[in-house]
Image (cartoon, rainbow over all chains, first blue to last red; front, side, top):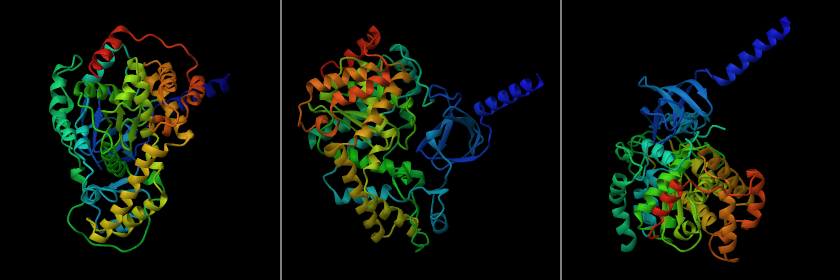
Length: 162
Length: 305
């Protein structure tokens, strides 16, 4: 009887640990403009922005969403696809020499970057990026998504939770 | 050229205007968040100290950062635009972005460096392209094949799944990446010198050619197409669309695609084969009717297409 109770308690603790990932760690924002949300969903209201390369402290995890604290002390949820465990080096100069061999570090702005695109555009004068720039201005707000889902009798996307 | 540029210039203005009149819009639009074409704040500053240790900082496409993927995707999309003009139907492009970006949020990779953006190409050809990072282009011919919003959602979800799986990047030859990763490891200066920039640009040009050629000529492997179809079924289910719509679309494609054609027929497996592996994933073969509100807005968006 006591054994069964211990097993049940252990199972409960393990389930809780799996559901609430509380291992605090540092991660970096790997998207141009990240947003922290009040709930683990894209339909959660925006708490505030996080910028490319910003280090955030993880608090807990729920599905594919991570509750983080930003360098400006903002807390909110962000999808894991916006984060990387690698540290971003934003203005890689001399430090890059040692960092380059470290798989835990990513060099932001290096490799294929805006300078390379500019050179590519100089080499290929007929390739026009105007439409690409215009396409990138087409963004849809959270409120529009909520309305679109409601109107279409659809359900809120789970944002990658499996 | 002018024909392409005029709608291009008008695009953001008309898009903004449409937001104001779109039945499903609320006070806050994300246009305050509109971004430019470069990753401003994190670009290298003035020249720093150069280091000469030759170290490759990556090995395969998986080591391409989302930022580098973004620049590859921009150039791939620009190349596609050199073959296909954009559709000037801004009302439809607005609808396409609302649908597509909502679907992308339900993927396993909702956040890419520059986000997901959609545009219709003004071509009767039946085709769709997903440039790395989330720039998705779909032809008017493909859109006209769709009878419901669910069917269009199936097409877009398949393309989103290609972005999610980074399939475009997989087509880049390793030699290009080795060059890139070695230069990153070699040149520690904040900005590249002319020789490094030239080598990097050469590797970049090669990478763009690899991806563009895969998207427009050779197509992905059957495995990657299956992966994209599986991803599409998942995304559709998460948002509440009928996954059977994918089978409906494939059946329609089977009827309309001409064997030996230069469009989807050339770059994708036979729709019949795709139906065979998609059906067991869905477990149902009868399409549910779309709710009237959904069908009404779909038909309204397609007016004058």
